[in-house]
Length: 602
Image (cartoon, rainbow, N blue to C red; front, side):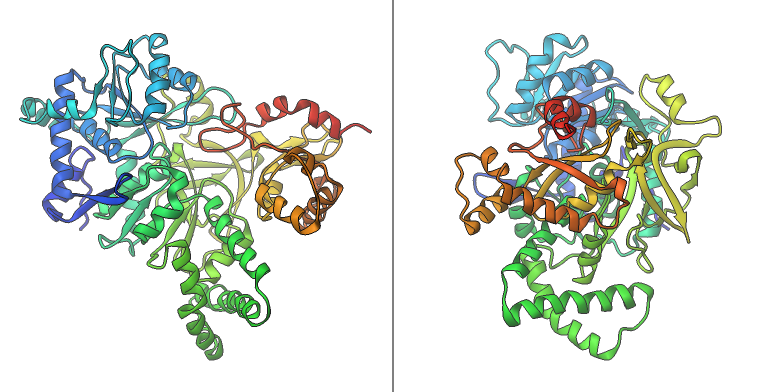
């Protein structure tokens, strides 16, 4: 019988179970060594910090802010807060000062933990505009405080104040009062439209998530090693790390997202949550290698993918035994080509890899499974404590987002909207009764805003209802479907489809600049700037051809007729991307209005 410990005591229970086994690891950037933290140390640090928080005067049910990139300290603060029946509110490490200010004021935060210099500077400049904020607590000793700063302290100073456990009786009494109905987190959605909303996630949401994942993922064990790569602010990574702690899985914390290519090879994890973009880059890398190869080498690589598809997708996926010849060839490729590919990425010890956050293009999904990587595609929202559905071990359908998790209710409503009900679904938005009433109907169904359908128990997504474009000819266009299809191309890094109230579909494209430069070199094209190169007729023709090839399956009115190649990527600073790198369509439309209008000139 599996026990489901309240988050306020979960780490302590695992420490009793695992003692000196490694619970967490983080990278020391000076020595490039990974520093281990045992379960016992994890538990002791949480006790000490819980006492320090009580000493600060943290109240039960108070909101505590964490504004940092991924660090072990983020988890220390979470669980020390839960011991005090307090609530944690994470902010994306990339948030601007204005975004931080909004959340700090909305959640009424008195104490904010900050990570590195960027978060400290952003928080300090917002300080005087935050009516409740009293103190910043800085994780990194290397952070230089502003000369005007009189009251910030460093994390190690705070931790020291709890050393002798001076408030232990108070902390223990609070922990004893903790219930599943307590609020655990307020997670602010990055909001592609309007201001962010604070999603309420209670301890009961997480406990139910653990239970249903234990049913779905029986092959996840305490021998696994998970790489924490997505921001701990993101519900997928947060809920996943809590699940790892529940299961006794070792968590290795990647500090900076751009380091993943290095850190993944140092750790060689068995588990890692990621977004489709990660796998798209793996796929693009392999396609590039195939493109460069010749003769026998090229033939073997192409054959390996073909053999893998027959073996894993046509047969094993349905529990059937592949033909003998295929099994023999697969076994050969498994020791050679697949092994080399996995080792190059750093995932040769892989157990499975949850992937969500955006649609996974079919060809990426097929490729990843063909080469023997167990990518579990799923669908979920902050409001559903992550997973609503995910690939089952057998019989998953490419193109779907898997089968529904146990005891999560799903029905399809008006406009094919996906509606959800169950114990993992949020009770609403913080201090936003109107938004809560709009999202959760009288029968308790949460309206996701995503359109889709169910077929033979598998859930399929079609579009984001709010994002549907209507052309001036009255035709509806789903921008995501086109963007997902076109972003597979190795020359395309980012794409924004334009069609709303326009005569036809156009696109703004951020190319992979290095590939365009390479192409120019091969073609003998000379240029002074990237902007000049992207206006070259040969480059435009290259993109035209590649887009036309990829969009054949779309109806004529859905296809991109004109496009503009941009010399600079979309940016968070200009407000074009959310913290989770989703496009803010209204901002893009506004920022590039002149360029867009030009595409529609006769």
